[in-house]
Length: 281
Image: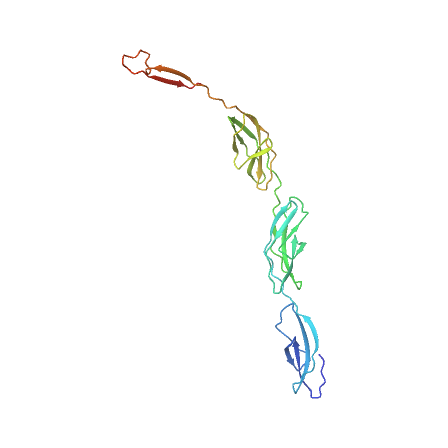
């Protein structure tokens, strides 16, 4: 700042930050310390003579304090496949002395996304790949944090189990079905039993009894499911004929008078009859 003319002589200069006096000096410069980082301040200067009279203030002149502090590194992200070829990346918030403005998502060191939130996704990934991602925070001044510890996504399971082999055993109104455990690259978690193409049972074991069936021929198939929801091809149909339930035959009945005796009753004995019957096959 330049010198001011005054007949009584300039005794000092007052540096104003807004309405407040931030510094008083006889020099032509002053320092204002302990300011907040990346914050705008406006200053004006007035001269004061030895009688305490102040000149009109010159200015203002405005500036912004620098921010040289980078944000902290975000926590390691969590990476999953939202669908085949689409990876989803989530992470926790980073901290900063002023404010985090955005995040940059890196895959193998290459920038693939800029977002203001705590999640991002990348599409078009080759099937079967296992991408690794890191995240860094950027503040309002453009300072970048160190990247987070990288996290990788396991490639999605798109391989279905093999088809089971099923066999059926019929009974009156029911069919018992059993099948083999098929191979899978991860592991089978359950099975679907279908009759005429319609799913009639979902089980975890390797057998099932279907009851309440009408008499006649029934064909059943089984599909295996893995943890990713992949379904195997259906097994070859396992067919069996549920027999018609047989009605019981009329029993044979015989009658004996006077108990089991075939002799004539003695004089004065009461007359009575015994009935007996036997089931017939």
